Length: 278
Ligand SMILES: N[C@@H](CCC(=O)N[C@@H](CS)C(=O)NCC(=O)O)C(=O)O
Image (tube, rainbow, N blue to C red; front, side, top):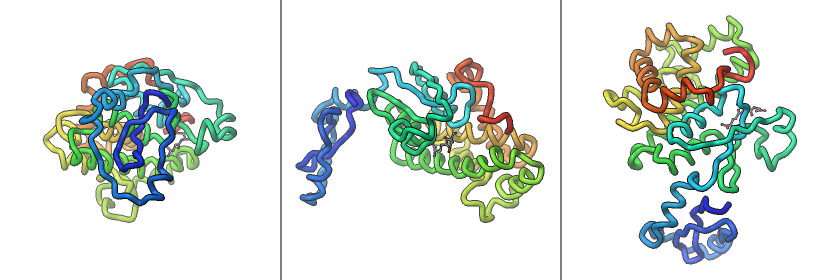
């Protein structure tokens, strides 16, 4: 990791941006158990701060994901496109995914690589882009909303995977999924936090703003739109009928400058999932 410049703890308890060659003295800090005093980096070294904020400026990032389907690569590609960041899509042979933990720490994709740092988990990648590219809202209040939204979309993803990949969208499993995770009347049932009503909650709480934290698109909006699109593909009529605010967010976001172009671009694969289902 060279210019990514991760924030580390200084032995004296101050925050500093350190280059990759330096070792983060976490052990030293915990041994001393000193109270942490944070000094804003910007106050001491504004250029280091700027570099840390925009690590993508120095190197073309690589998205390790299958280039022929959208899946969990889609919101990452959308965020990169929106910010005008050039990136490389690197294919993954399915066999490689399960054989090299240095490439895939959790034997899953996506993986993201920038300035010598490789990391995993879609939401960690989105948060990184959110923090460094101004897609996380304007303040802590917005960031809380964005984080809640990312977790809410992830909760639904966890339910969608078995429906699509294991049950292959059988009529029976689709009907039971609808009852539990889509139908308005089941919104307060036991669903592990996965319900279309919770998607709409983010739009309701920000209404009449166009996006979930106000006038600017965040990684929360990107994830929410991605999650909503997958639901629309399965239950479009029902969602339009029962969730008018979410439906209008869905349309509005798709027309936003930058997003509209991404949705039509060849960088967005035509296929949604790794199997031609859903
Ligand atoms: N929590 C992970 C989940 C990633 C995930 O489910 N990736 C799928 C492809 S979209 C995968 O690698 N599947 C293979 C497997 O889980 O064995 C993330 O958000 O990145």
